[in-house]
Length: 313
Image (cartoon, rainbow, N blue to C red; front, side):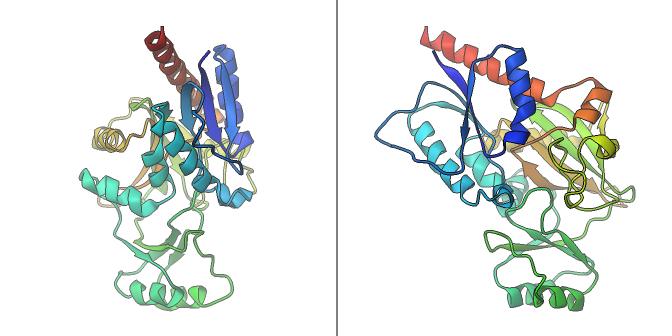
């Protein structure tokens, strides 16, 4: 019998999805993609495969999880298996440069960004951006590597010093700093390619923002659950032109489940800056709003499995 397969590298983040799948009595297995093998001479099992590999896997000592997942996805897709968030989604997950190119292709405004490899090259490239500006890792997650600088001299001191934190892929992004007058960013969630809800996030206490309950409140500004829940508020009746634009971007890149983040500056101009294909949800915010992101994902996977079973019968 065909099943649902959840591909991931973080047990804690999958726990709410396990609960939702169990509640619906849906048959599923998990593939923990840290290390392993892919035998291309053997076909994969029948089923629906949901990829939840994260760009921040290296921070959990799963350095080559994305590369291993890319091999697994190539194997699944070669054999025509139904994959949600497949190879193209993984490409966007692990590269903000690829994300910005995809957003730009559909007319979505992003902050001015320069991709740089090399420490001295970072310093030199900063001269082309008006201050203030930020650095950012190309492959990150939770806002890792984001630092704000008000002049090139401060940046140079950081980059040339022992505290410099390189991106795991070697690509550092220099980006214009977009300041929200309310210190708020908005994340627009999609499940099955459809708008689910938008959540506003208070950024006043730091850049590293992860809505998952598994993130520790004392772990580098990652606020989730408990005291951190108040920083996340689901917006009722949310409307914005970006909803339709984001939907087109996701559809064009074969992304089925994702959260897309944007910020609005003092002039009211909106900038998109992150596509997260391994989206998590804050249970406190969802409880207050009476919605469930993982429940919506479980329902989506259930529909996909039913469609697969009908086609096979």
